[in-house]
Length: 559
Image (cartoon, rainbow, N blue to C red; front, side):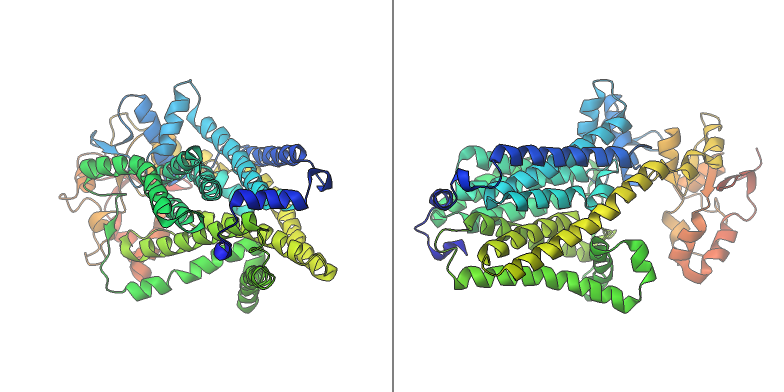
């Protein structure tokens, strides 16, 4: 779009905007906008602190992050100890988040509280960075404030930032890098290029899906830079060299230590089409949550939910199509107006396209498959919110003569924002009161966990909830749900009947088998109708030493 008139530079476009909109004519001085964005960011910090009043959400991955950081501080290395005492390097994820936790731990901070405050501050930082970028590129204070408010009030982001996970670091660094790449494409300066590469590279080092930020920013440098192709290619190559260096070092080390990358393997191409089709129902459910609460979705008819989903997609597509048609038909971009807004829109569309393609590719080609939840596709959510705000602002500027259209656009956007204002504080209050993950009362007061803590120090453990046991007791366990235990082709048998399995061999030698009440559901999912029979066979003939409200402890023979 911006290539219609290559003779107009981004700097000249900015000066042209200034000429038509002198400072005296602006409704709000720039310093006030920056201050208001900071206040919205601080409100976001407060929102996360309220949501994590009982502590940040802790689950499987969070336990791995926290334990790996603690082990690094203790001099054992970045990773986990196995039940037999051997060391396992950090599995599944890249290392930036646990490394940051370890750095904070050097100052004597409790790592759980450090994760809480780090993620709350990163939420405020993400809101401010996004709002400032929107204001810098669109020159519309109302649009920047709207974009920041949408992020601050997003029910998706409040949940993501309330867990002790890597997403806050990943999102902050990734979007910072993307916005800096847009800035470099409009005004090539080495500092902007280095900042873009560093931000995107750190995002990749926080989560492997950060590769999407690297790819999107590289495309921004190639497509939005007004210089010749040789200069664009040089900039893109320099960007890739800097941004990929940290993750390349980590992946080489991970491959050397574990013989795998991210502890995943490549799936057979057989059934690829079916796996691809299976991705769309969860993606639709994720996007529907952006529009309505999940409690409302559960009560509405399936057809109505589908219509709401389609309406959300159509509204965003209509905004994009309307702005594109008006911009081109009236040659506003060719005249040097709205080029900053257009650059931002294009960069967000590139980000969405790269993330969709990359996520689907990983989903259909790797095992175990990734989970397609809002945590996985959260960059698409942020991009969609920013696109809605920026496109609405562009449409308003292009259609100033049609007040009914301007009023309608703002009515829809502000109504959507109001729905978030109703939903999200209630969600934050609920999280803060009930807790998330292992911070919930049912975990904190677990009878079975108390019984596990009382086991003699040398007792090895096998369990179906290895991260729960690890978080609450600090003791590594053998995984019950592994090997022949979950092989549908093997005959039902009591646990311990196969001494070739490391966990079952340890069980025969006196280890405790700790079965939580979540196991029947897992067996039902794995074995279907055969689940109850399998579970009965698993404990047949074993000595039950303890039975609590949420689990039981078995031994191969009575002590």
